Amino acid sequence: MTVRALVPLLWLALASSASAAGPRIVIDPGHGGAKTGALGAAEQVEKALVLQLSLKLRERLEEETGAQVFLTREKDALLPLPDRVTFANGKRPDLFMSIHANSMPTRKLRERVEGIETYFLSASASGAGARATADRENADAPRAQAVQNDSTLNFILHDLVRMDAHAGSSRLAYAIHQRLIASTGASDRGVLQAPFFVLTGVEAPAVLIEVGYISHPQEGARLARADYQEKLVSAITSGVKDFLKDMRKRDAHAEETAGPPQVAAPTSP
Image (tube, rainbow, N blue to C red; front, side):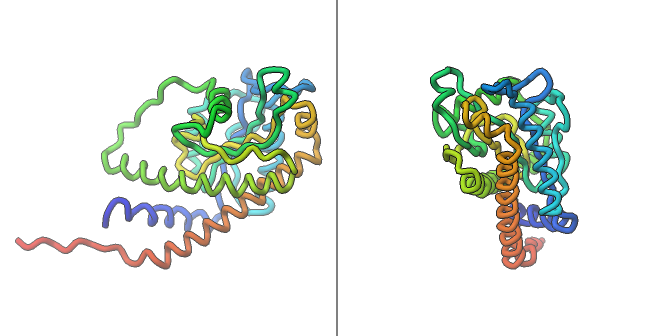
């Protein structure tokens, strides 16, 4: 059996164990501690808003999906970006979501730019705006990542698993984004790609959600309202449920088509 042929079987084994106990989800509330994130027009700070949303989202996901949901931080505390990735992989999640609120740097742009963006990982950004957003969110990232000293086989397996996770990240991003726009009526700024550090190395479908522009006078005010937060939480939960349903269908199909493993015949002496 080839190394590439092992990947669907690895995902199938992980999915089977996860389904017995419910899906495992990691939510990453952005920033925290001294890193406040974006600042809103009405003295809002991103770190507090996204933590509030993440706590509500955890409760809703647990209720509606039976998921085991883990937060990278549950209070106003600073957690370095590499530690968030390590924490996520340690939970062996079925999916990972990093929650953020966006901002614009100038008064003119702050008054004009609003809307929701959903990202998945790419080495290159979808455009200048996506690049700028990634640069802001990556401001606290280390300049270089340590390379693990894995065997060649492990390196290949990990790389292939990440490739499969990347395809899942795209599906997860679109599932969540469509629900968010339909539920909130917010400006649709699209599903985009960018090199976010916090998504790098997560060995599961992973997305970063910019729930709106906290810097926009009207949208920033909406983000602070309980009824609007309810719309965001409900939409993200619905998107996650859509993704998990799709993943179960794919797992069932993979199980049907995988067949028994092929073992190479012994060579003649």
